[in-house]
Length: 289
Image (cartoon, rainbow, N blue to C red):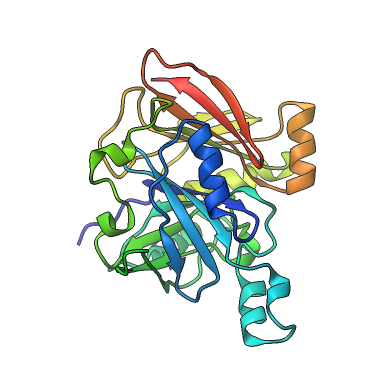
């Protein structure tokens, strides 16, 4: 059996306040994205989502908790489960990202073996089952490989390996689902901010996760080239950029939100407008393909 790739971008997670999936879908439509019908409710009922699928096969997951924590009685099993969710204490915005995993190979064992050999600090927990029931009643199943709690969730990716067919989870058919008024084709880059003192360790960790060294490396910024689940789009493959803050505004964001995704850039078709936009909870950059 061949070793699975650990550098395929699967999706990027955007969190909004509880019960706001419909509202954030409207906001993304106003930005020029085509939002698929609500994806449904995840197993356990804590979160619900809608999807923005892209022609490169990756997608945006617009997610919110179904209820605020105060909805659940203090000390109840439901409240304990809500509080234990890895995204429970995240501020709204770009909060996490996933690489494509495997349903029959342990990604955690693969990465942990690399990390031990590399002498890097990253460690992944054993796989856990996950799933979601779509709004049409179809039940999806997958396996999640996630970095250990002290590894910085949202800096290193989690992995999602489909047990049921991936096309059930990512509705690329009909192709019109991935056609956007803004001309968006796919992901150009995901940029993550870290503290100056952490860049060296994070670089070593991500080298163990991805399985290869960065293609660009300075004392302020490192870059890897990733794959996508579908064919490449005009403009090339997506990049993962990890950097220290480069402006006072970025420094302020890092201090307020902690380490994690700062901005997501999209490739747009020729003739469409490039630039940048802000959702109420995060930065978006448009780049011509």
